[in-house]
Image (cartoon, rainbow, N blue to C red; front, top):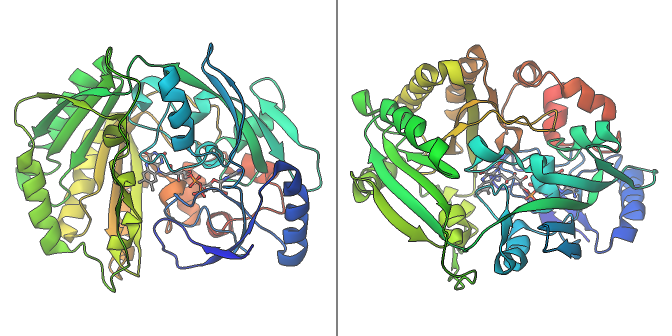
Length: 437
Ligand SMILES: Cc1cc2nc3c(=O)[nH]c(=O)nc-3n(C[C@H](O)[C@H](O)[C@H](O)COP(=O)(O)OP(=O)(O)OC[C@H]3O[C@@H](n4cnc5c(N)ncnc54)[C@H](O)[C@@H]3O)c2cc1C
């Protein structure tokens, strides 16, 4: 009871008081008592969303992280039924030794099952697998003063589609059943090569994406002129031989929040130059542990503290395929001339597999995700970027957002009204209040 929680970017600063549920059967009464004292609340997973979509409008959340039990597993078919607070790391810990992997893994394994569904997360294999919701078989959903309902592609279908990517607003997911994919080894065979421009990124992506399960690129957000969009291209596949047992990796810790961000123009320029040059100009094959390939940042506990006490924002947009090369070039030029950003900058082509979720973020096109230390100049930079994204017919990712204007959200996600109709009126986030009012 009464732990203070925040979002991953720690911006906006809005400490959340948390009521914790330890057992599924106590969720209805905890929900009722929070609603009667606070008016509304919001389910909270593990706080790996960057902006305000995991923050309750009342600043009182219902924490589901302790609902972390496996209910049923079927290792013949690779199906797992688990409580919503189980993290993706906990699933991988038991599934990998049995030869199964998550069909879709985002860049952190510390997201919960409930959080992964509510943001319909995507990963480095969006071009071949789609989103997390594409592998959700069923889930148990609890709404205020109602019985728990099972939602699937054939049962309570409206709620099923609205809850996938539904930002925790349609009800509390108590449990979910997901389909995993078979693997022969826990390791990933990767090919890495640096590239010198955005044009090269698009030609590498056109050549390599279709041949590999995973594909992603790091980019140097400060590069200018003909080098705009230079970076490092990485593709990978589950290895066909090797062990299913992984060595435990050592954890590092960022012990405190410095008063100011450790990421600034000077440190960033040096880091980006060195990082780019360290990577091979010829394609290099490597074998990686799955954790270093998928979740490099999870190795440092509380890495978000490097941005100092003011926190940071992530800007993640997706630009439709037809205009992506031109618009992404313009977006990157604007970012580079602003001199802002961080070394965490990721470019990725998204595919055309449609999610069952009505508010899912990815679309066929190219996605850019970039962290920015919080400062007063961000608002004007984001305003410029937003207008480019919206003119191009693209959209921003609510899981990462703390600034998007309501009119931009409503234009980019026309199904928002369907979600609003199905929203449990006792659930309200700071994000939803900001974008629909
Ligand atoms: C390092 C890092 C890398 C990331 N990489 C990616 C990426 O590659 N792709 C991607 O898509 N995302 C990525 N993310 C974002 C992250 O995967 C999502 O924000 C995810 O939803 C966080 O899950 P969580 O359990 O922490 O949920 P929270 O952040 O606590 O909550 C997220 C949403 O889920 C809702 N929710 C949580 N639990 C429940 C429940 N039981 N029932 C109903 N609603 C619930 C909340 O109300 C909220 O709306 C990344 C985040 C980090 C920190």
